[in-house]
Image 1 (cartoon, rainbow, N blue to C red):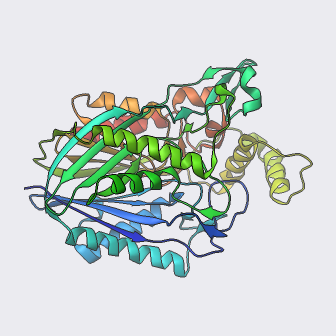
Image 2 (image 1 turned 135 degrees about the vertical axis):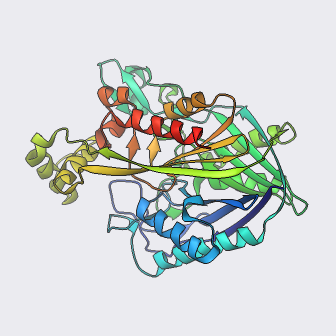
Image 3 (image 1 turned 135 degrees about the horizontal axis):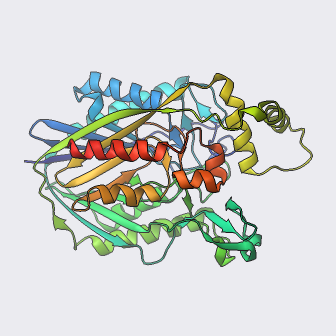
Length: 430
């Protein structure tokens, strides 16, 4: 018999902690809503799967590995059966192994989160109870996720071109994904809902902590289905956000974050009684580390871009550069100390006929469709920033087109095939 368990712990960081996500220093000055670790535990015939989500902007691969190994030592669940996902709100901190602006890499709070990760895993395992699982897929009633890269009339591709540039836009570079996937674990003590949707949680901004719209999804689902615990998993969202630039109407802030959570939760409500049983005859996880070459493009511009990079961070530029300019300079400046090959964690788990595909960074929306196409007869959930937070994963085409993500990505166009071939291999190994 399948078993499922759930636990949630508050890991809200203290005031003064760095808030990650932008090219400037930000510190926590207040709290809009708490930051949580959530854990879903699933067991079948002695095989266990732990999915831990954190309301962090990112959790680097080395930190995820330490978390999983600590959990194995405490619970006996193999580290390879633990998936740690950062949900990527830009109103929270990031966990790193190195000192990086606005990231936490050591100290009391870092140690606390590491211990709490073990605690939440133990609590979820203690909560295991016989369960049946059913699933459903649907579309949100109103589109809230949009591809943020646009073809411009001047022949360029711009990420977040600005609402004042609406007349200069030809159209988005890809189609967004606005589908919601629901897994409903039915137990005597109450349901566990796993909700999957893909969009950048970068709606609020500022220096007040928040889980952004994924936090609202959890709260709405739990409030509207008494006795239900909700875990949210963010899908592949590397080139999407909440801005629809061709509309010319800017939306954002805490109320729009609430609205987005409301829209996703409404889709969950519509699916709640439409779920169909899933034959959960096995549970398993397969993972592999892809070692991909570091992109050396523009190294010949090192001196120029290093000077720009240093001037920006010293506050000596006489203009405000674009995020693309800053990202390109940072990528090239890092090349002298960069590894020749970069590790990328790829993880594929299954709960019966449900596939959960995780990639350790921010894959473009295209990868959602590509992974689904690898197993069209199964329900596929995608997880960004799973077991690592190693950068953007554009498509090979996007590297040619350009934009912020392509400028900042430390990978080569070969990464598309390397990731998808690895995901396909791991799916076949389930």
